[in-house]
Figure 1 (cartoon, rainbow, N blue to C red):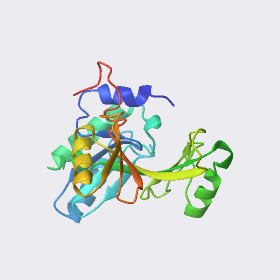
Figure 2: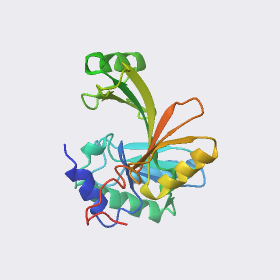
Figure 3: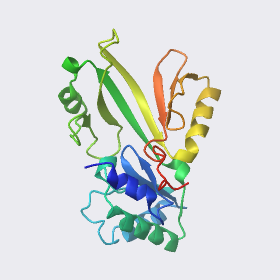
Figure 4: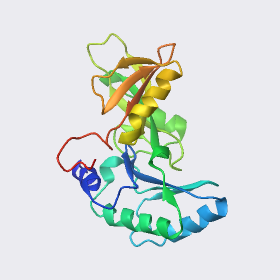
Length: 222
């Protein structure tokens, strides 16, 4: 697993419907009814290469979301063809992608190295491992839990915050909405890749355009 897979995906043509988030590439297609979502999901399930690939389809009465993998570092160049085929299938069914609805929420639990306790979080949540430092909902519905090493210079022994990964072109609007709702800007040194905000009590949230807009190589589309 490496960065090459998701960077190649972002650089590819014909994947404009897709947003690359912490949890991999996802596309959300709007539909007019639950039945239409089911029919589209059935058609998507027949796309070559998608069966048993680890893809996750979520059906609702106004959309179908398609996630190609469960983690961004599991994206491979072969997923580009699958993504294109899924988009073509959606267009054939009259369903348009809505990048503004694509998001991934992750709970980041930071602790000093001797206090990292990912096994506890997997057990208490009934989650499964995806990597050594995280836990994921086996049903694909709940937020990922990521264990982060705390800065050893900080006096805290533990901390927790929420990461919200969104499409690069919608990140600033999400930040603006949060500030308009009473949030506070804590740090924008990494913008436009990410912003750190807090609520009025000081609880922190990171709005991240990474990885969808998290590198500046010439191959980055848009």
